[in-house]
Image (cartoon, helix red, strand yellow):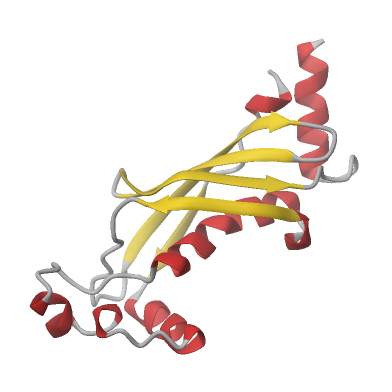
Length: 151
């Protein structure tokens, strides 16, 4: 296996209506489509939607958990594919995040993410660049083992 094919451990994140409301307060984004079914319906949405930047931030956890140091993130980008509808239930909705190293260079590691809800992509073209992990970290050992297999 090439270091450019290392998979990150998958991540499942449950998002509830309370999470979305807390994020609205933290971000000072009180657009009612993020908390009111009535306002969402007035715009022909089937329900309240999570903030796109909240979804993006949650998905980045797969990388920061793997790299173990959020300060290692160099860049992060995506396109918003479709809204994440958050039902007013205790269970909310589950965001599924998978990641794979796509390139390893001396100064950075590029990781591509696949972010879905119920199998449908909600973020697309998700790319994160991070500083190379320390060799003694779990991420560093995973990359070294993949490189050794490739020799």
